[in-house]
Image (cartoon, rainbow, N blue to C red; front, top):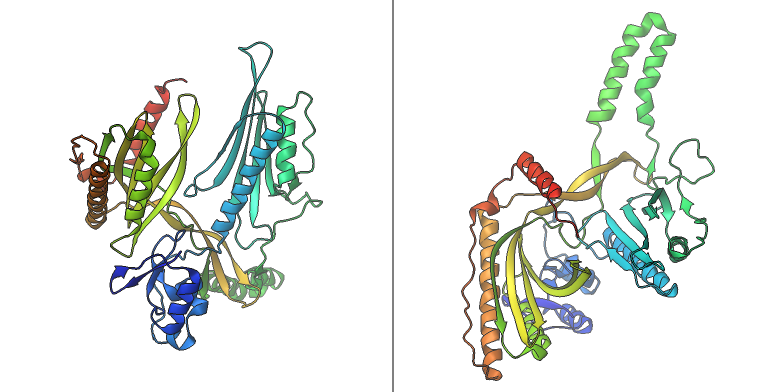
Length: 463
């Protein structure tokens, strides 16, 4: 379902067919902000898949070209395909464990974590109840933009205390996952064969090489070497060849025009959170209606007052006392501000709460390759993205404060209506727990943070 802004107001949910008709009639224009579930921010209709329905005359009404230095997000990027690959491996692990009659631990990294990984772990019981055979495996997926094999997999196995790694796998299929699980859990393990590896060293000529598809050899890089060798052959003229070689090297490295080809960035920003305000309460005697309240809050939060505010439901996992726990939470974002809303059944009651954070995480570009494109002959840098940190400022804090106050106002009104409808005799304290704003924009000392982490790791409680 799509939403668009009409006279500065968020429209009701609209189907794709309705949006197509609105675009063709001109009621929704190319520059109208639109949004649908799965998009990170509101975007002009011409920058989404709706662009194919924008009449050409309408699409060319603006004379400006968008040249803002902003990394693109799209549904068809290497990062979305990475999530699909990760989901396939995760599901293959679950199905393979079920086929072996085992209930094991299967985990996968969150979408905002890079590099992506999938983990399998099992403690196989023995006749002695206190004795277990412990096995685990982790598959890390490394994106390789512009290469022949878009993803490279790295497998790490720990079987009965023996660790083995298989790096540079060009593929990790469903069949590979099933073979791996059988290798780990069966008493007489199957040989782990058939893994499709890539060449890591030049002498491994029997293995395929993960070549860069769009780059060709840069002949200009041979020019300085050729001039230098020419000077050695014609030694009396070496003093002429040597400056020419230096100039050719300087020109090829620093003076040639160089373009940038970007892989874009994932739909979600990496998370590096600093906690701000929070609020929570219990609604007595309504535990069996917690889903009703949650759906009502989700519906209210989806009607955002500003274009850059986003709401979605997110399923998370975390380590509990006895294994992993999974929960659903409502996530609202506006700029760097992020608010998590929690609605859970707590016995016969409902727990409702929210906590706000300033997100310091941000994707930053990192050079992956440099070379000459086959099609254009242009020198290009191929850039990927890695998680980085951007310290917030006072305006980010304002955005977060607005988001938290709006969420609290909507939650307060919805909860009061919910209590009144069910005639629950309860006084709820709607006072927000305020935290200091100074820590939100302060640059943390890396040396102090490193020392703190070391102390925490030393005094970490076992179990």
